Length: 614
Image (cartoon, rainbow, N blue to C red; front, side, top):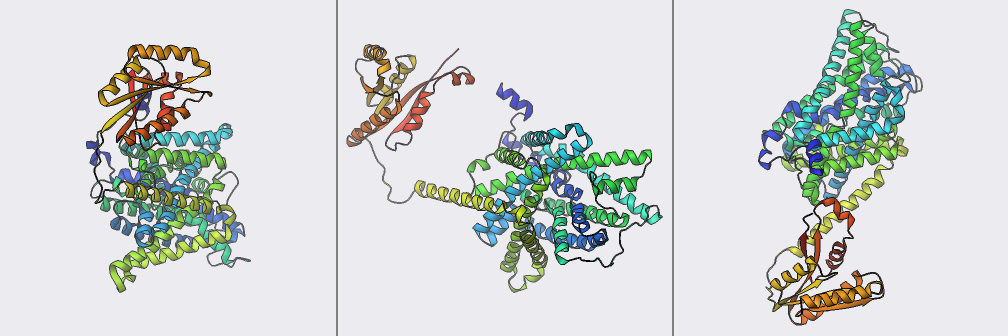
């Protein structure tokens, strides 16, 4: 039953041999899968700039133009930098690998931990924004906003568990619909501007003095606008997912994405200034712009609703960037032994399913904690991406210094510029948004400690398992097999027969309690009838616990066997029900005994399984 459901929702297992070009992404698919986060941010990034500026006065809106230029400058710097990262670190890992290799492992963990949390926030923010768009169109669903968000996370999780290619193919329609509809909107707006159909209604002229305007306000507006650049790093984390030549295809996809993002951001910022649009309660700036450009005709209304539909779709599927980048980053961190090795395992559909499941679970926890409120999530989202941005830029400066020596400045110019801007954004967030972003710091502190603890554990394990000169082979004089007997059944008889085939000496043990004293005498007699030559040790206990006396007796037997140079094998009989669900009907005492005995280093714990047919 479970297998049928799994095949229905996730699909049948794929052979590892198909994990070649057929399971990887071309540029069109990769653009759809990895750019949705970055592209969707233009639905709220330019608006965040305006919201900060109009908090002083609508006259300040013209400042969105120079601020937009600085955002585009940062985008260019990040694009150049991440293209360099793709070629320098084609194994993926992005900011984590760059920081780890060029700065320090500890700073690399801060970058990696920041991105892991940020990808969870990406999913949470994106599905919450998508749910907001859905409930705005259908107000009756507003009480179920959180439920819709969690449903969208589960839907994207299942989509990604089915495999990369299927996920990317499913996302091509919403992503390209949004790109084409937004590009059409902007080009149509520019056409109307040149033909005189789009009147100049700016709230102020460029360069006009704005009373009480401060550098602090402009810096806050800039950091808010920089939210449009979240998701730019995702492609550098997912280079191994590309078809060959991987680095070339990944770098070209990043460039295409950045050009589209830059064009959309610049177009929206400029047309918003030209049209003099100010924030209105219940309607986004982008929606107002679309209405103003498309007009009141039938074509205008149809185009407007198509555009709004595409915006809602891109916001909902933007979460998929996290689903592709998080598993690859966790794979790289697990490969370096900073995360559990289970994150390196591929699932039936050749995806890193443990990473996908962890991301979905983390995103749902965030949605529940913040009740799906995007305004509370976005500040954490921003600091989570700009910390690794800043560290990766610094790492690339160090990389070029090692590669080029004294002539590194030419290659590192974009990184230096990007580092200055990114550190400035982090500083501004610390100064003016600390009340919103403070949870980020204890989370990263705990994650870094956890990563180091995991790494320390793996190092200790490797040290203890490693072969070295001087290790002597040990020979034993025999094997003592101790069989735990609860009742005399086919299971225990089969276990004794097996024990006799592998042991030089066989003992049996039974635990008696006051409640079962009469039945225990029958068991002892029945055992003696079947196996007159095997000693059955009956241990009486005044308590209902049979595990503690069993462990004590095993320890005593192990000490005696050690003096005789014997090994000790504890054989635990168990029966396996015909159907898996039937396990819950039994007490699983054999599992409890095996778990308790596994911590004793002088014994080997083995199972004898008897399979029921009905």
